Length: 219
Image 1: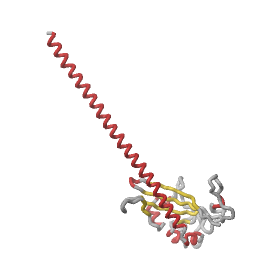
Image 2: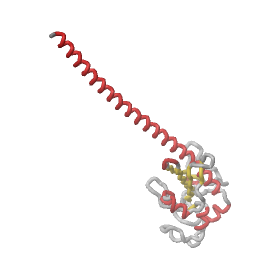
Image 3: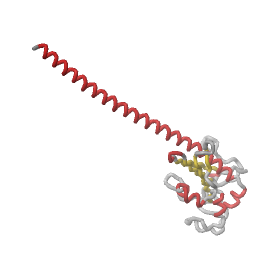
Image 4: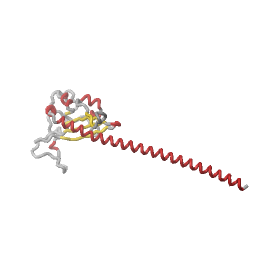
């Protein structure tokens, strides 16, 4: 009698151990799935951060292209033109020199911007490429493939068309020393400031905007 009872008790213990093992296996499987998801997410975030950093670095290529454009002889030759221009509230497409501005990715006054100061025209690639004529450049391509697509826009920081003046434009003479030597040199000629906006489109739909304020140093 006692022998049969001991045999039944042993079978029950084996059943309990099996159930515990199954529960442990399920918990381990769930933990493994969670770990894999965490690793995949971390890798994705790291990759996106890397692409974003590459996109920011590529913006320097757009700035260099803008500098090259501003050094052209006709850059300042056309920016003071008021022939055919409507009042500042309008678009300025009727200006006689508008075609020359378009060839330089330049506009002689500030264009409409969003709350972050980004010109609305450069946020729409189709409209921008229609209005301005310097083709996007490709930066950081590998064997001629891939790379980031870079566009730039130069705006003279003025409210109106025509020659720059201290009433309607921000001039280099308006700058003051912040402790890093950024101030006009004694006897220098006041020049208008220019806002250069660079848009970079990279892989995984990464998109970056960078801006600089620059001017000509003249004596």
